[in-house]
View 1: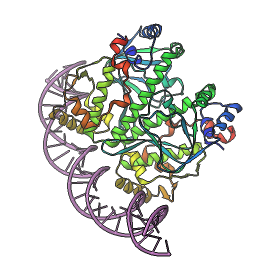
View 2: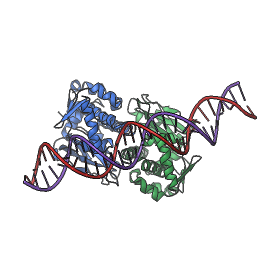
View 3: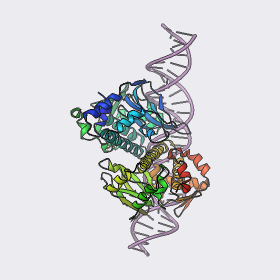
View 4: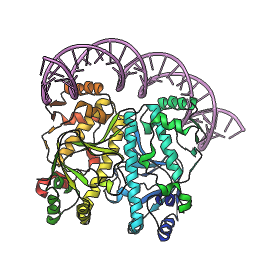
Length: 243
Length: 243
DNA sequence: CGAGCCCTTGAAACTCGTCAATGATCGTGG
DNA sequence: CCACGATCATTGACGAGTTTCAAGGGCTCG
């Protein structure tokens, strides 16, 4: 079952032909190993990348050598639709874990957005991405490191649930501590301490890439997490019936 | 001369009729005093607001009472085009200074986006807004407070230049220090100290809302500022000829 | 004239970053 | 096969950046 479908059905009332067009996109996936740049800052991508399996991210490097992760790209996410309108990328897209990726050609994208419901779903999805970015800014700007980390873990839980990659508070989190540090803007050392604080409070466990949120209510509380910005609608909640 | 035009001509090759349609929008502006919410989080705006004069912002409040400013809205900026697609706002839009604002009705927006070049220009403009948001995340996540402040001031210089509200490094900055603190995620006290550090280095002066960047090269250097993400193209640089 | 807001400054406390060292795991090549 | 280097997680000590608390001065406005 295709994560693109799972994601987009939450944003628009796709009909059978829409679904089959989307399913056809995933014909020839490519396996990409971890830590590979898919599209680099300054480039103009000729194709659109979609993640089918694994974790990828957007990031930017600073002159001082720091890396800021700007977004996580999880199965079902389109990486570079903006590259279609603007000349070149203002950031880099890279895999964090091994990934299964499809590259969609320009023609296919044009065919996609010619279908009104799919265009609507992609449009909504882009707006949710922007809302996530705003929430990250609040997160990094206003909260202490422990709350920042907790917030990111809460958000991932809900995003992965949409594409059915979460099971009762548990999901695969194939990241290094440095990756997490670069997303919440702390040093790797401090991230480690904050992580252990969450473990000591019995809020999470994390071993062998398996993250388990053992107390979601409490984790959401310490992080000030409110899922509203993710716009998880009825369609997503009952996506088993919608499909 | 209309700031909407100044801004959009940089993104698309608008013809005479496009320009006149855009100019007609600004017929009945409204004066709004400082610190007034234009659209609140959770609401679904029925109209689209455009700033013609003054400074506004997007912001979110946290449970702990903190405010994070997510974007500055300056003359020519559309405040809530996304409200058209999604049900409700994930953040609040408010004036920071007294503003001249126009409210565009749904019908007029539909008429606007029916014109391909205007739709393209609005689309590009939204993508630049997203790029600015990403750069802010890098700014807050990776740089120390002094560089963060310097970066914001550099960005504003260039954005205001596009709409001809900057003159040889000087522009009107009608914000309080608290506003700046809430944009770079520091306390107001620390912002004050960092501000004075920039003044002591003779990089800026700021008095009676008049900000002067006395050494742009140096200010850009200390903040790691690179204007690339703003996508200021040829059309903007020679906008006096384009109009 | 007083109230309120903004800017400014000092001192103390705290969060967080840097430096340094250790152990664990893992893939690679000798 | 084992040694080696590389990457990652962990911990301690120290210092820098930043917050909080507190107080005072300048300004506007009622």
